[in-house]
Every structure is written in C-alpha cells, then in structure tokens.
Picture 1 (tube, rainbow, N blue to C red):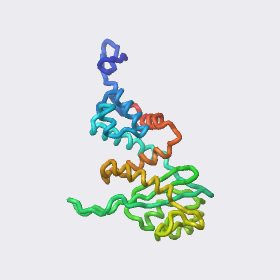
Picture 2: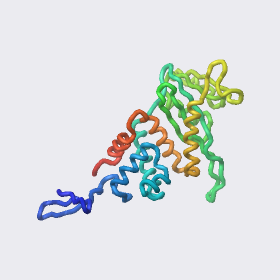
Picture 3: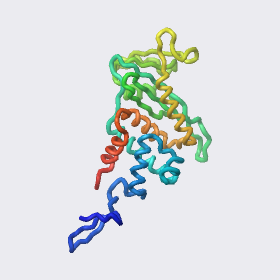
Picture 4: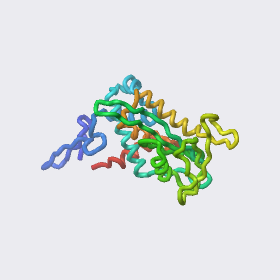
Length: 254
C-alpha cells in the first residue's frame, strides 16, 4: 500500500488490484470533514478548555457549527470512558460533600409541560473525585439510590438540612456518618465546621458553563456533566493524551 499525500488515500501497489481507500475510512475522523491539522489543534485547545466558539472561529478558522459538532463528539467519548470505568468515591474516614441544585424550571412547551431538571452531585475532599448526575427530583428515593451507587462504605457525608437526606446513617451495610450545615443560618457550621462549599463551587462551574452556552439543551445536560466529571477525574493527567487514548479505544480502526 502506498499513501498519496496529495489525495490522502491509500493505493494498493498490486497491479491486478490498484484499489484506493481514503485515509479517514473506518476511523473517528471519517465524518465530519476537517483538515487533519485543524482536528489536532481543535482537540488540543479543547483539552486546555479554551475551545470557545469565538476562539475557534478567530484562531482556528473553524465555524461555530463545526466546533459544536466536535465538542459533542468529544463529550460522547468522555461519557463512554466514564461508563467503562465508573468511579465510586469515598471510603472509611473520608469526607464527601453532597448537594443538589435546580438547573431548569418547569416550563410550558409546544409538546406539553417540561418538568423541572435537577442535578445531584458529590465530591471527596481528600481525593477530589466527583460524581454528578441529573435526577428527576430531589426525593429521598432518587437521592438515596444515587448515594448508595456512587459513594463507597464508611465515609463522613456532609449535606445541608434537606429532609431527603435523613436516614443516611441508617443505610444498611454502608456505615455512613452524616454531618449537617444549616444554610439558612451559616455557610459553615460554627460548632462542627461542616460545610458544602467545595461541591457548591463545582456546581457553580457547571452553571457558569451552562450560562455561557445560553442554557444547554436538556438532551445534552448529561453529556456536559460527563465532560466536567471526566476533566476532574483525569485532572492530574495530560488531558490531550487522555482524550486521544480514549478516542482510540472508543473508535478503534476498522
């Protein structure tokens, strides 16, 4: 096989064959079309979290639509990676802050009424590992199920006074301990020092990102959360290396 640098195609050298195949065929780059150099530059900028639409247009000559498509593709890879290697945070003696927040109010829509949309998340203070999920509401059933799936046995869980958190200490075989802070009175409990400022800060990062995106479409919220969690999970890794490795496993050569 010979590679033509003019047409970016492989050509079989066998006289009886002479078949040609595109360099992108069967790869993650098959669609949408973009120059290889632009792809590498875009992924690099995305890994540095600077691939904003204006930057892509002015510095990379990539259209807004193309940049949005590629961001969606990369978030798809992040989502796949997290499902391949799910993270359970916490453990004996570690501190886990949890918090829930409303990101979309109940809205009238052409097809009916869209319900509220909530995000529930947690962060381990010691390891900085996080989880963040959309939940239909903040009832005890939904929140407690997520807690048991995402938080390992034995940690100290810090929350506000929301009623759905009552009973965390009694969850069977999990050995959870709970500390509380009353947000109507203090950000930090003056007696125990309990607070949820770390998870609230992470939540603020997402909300600011959502605001810059002029409110993320509901169908994309989970993928944005996965990107945030992916960046946090691999924060000590060179993210360009991590995302390219993830791409190679998400879409291996055919």
